[in-house]
Length: 424
Ligand code: ZN
Image (cartoon, rainbow, N blue to C red; front, side, top):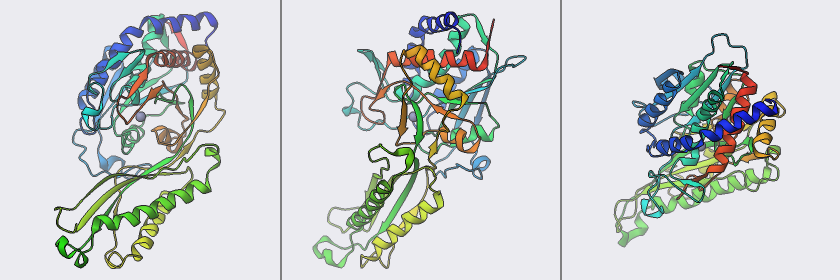
């Protein structure tokens, strides 16, 4: 941890750049980097990295390059415009430890616009919060990473370890952006991801799996509904059976999630089916997102889901002979527990206390983050630590400005100590 005088200089430098940082965060939030549309925002990040003299690596993700790697999730969409960007700070004679500062540029869909108080891609600041889709999850974090470096330089300091600023795509659906960074060869002594963690350190996260269930029925005129088989209504017992599995897993529990209420969540998040109101629907497809505990094997999970569906289908006279089909694309993500007590964690604790004036809390995630790639597949501690947000993935997503300022101070202090600094 930098000494008191140096720490004060650094935190003041963060404050001096904060107005510009908020403007940058708003400009980035204004770019609607929904899945498949991230390229403009990635250009913005590449420019910001280049302006700071970082070496730019901007590449298109190729499925063939990563599909054989652990942690890969299959995709049903095109990667024709799937760009990752890394900005590298490489001092001439690197003497300090190296650091990855990662963040994801992709944001989730807005939902019906009339449910937002103001348009999601027209960020606004009100009562100390910035509103906008992606403002908290996680463009504020992407900006904080970069403005931590700016602050050191404003204080006349140059980090003496390698720093890789990663702006990745696909965090919200597969994690293949972070995986592509590993495949590309990026490694460091620690990775920090300023996801909106409420100023706490993520100590465990569940795994996440996506799958799609396709059910076929038998069409008939509704006047003779008994002659048909309703594909939509046939899904109800299948969904109920999956919720029983969810219940069993929550009952079984996991030590890292003791004290967390209902860590495993199964949600039917999309459903389509049927063609005509007076026809018995002959098809229905639903998408489900399930949580899994760390340590659960993905192949075992898939088997258990399939057995659950097959058992439920057997109880239905039509589905018994026309079983549902299951397709996996999107998240096939394992859970991750942060190894406690690393040097990076100890330092982050000190830097957090210096910035916030209070102890660093720990947070259990019932969702996933890209931290798993660093921790599980590269032996790099993945520290999730970022600002305070509300209503991410919902309406009126917002991030608290004061928490951004303090997070940036903590990251800048961490950078100074971890990498070492020299007067520029
Ligand atoms: Zn996120």
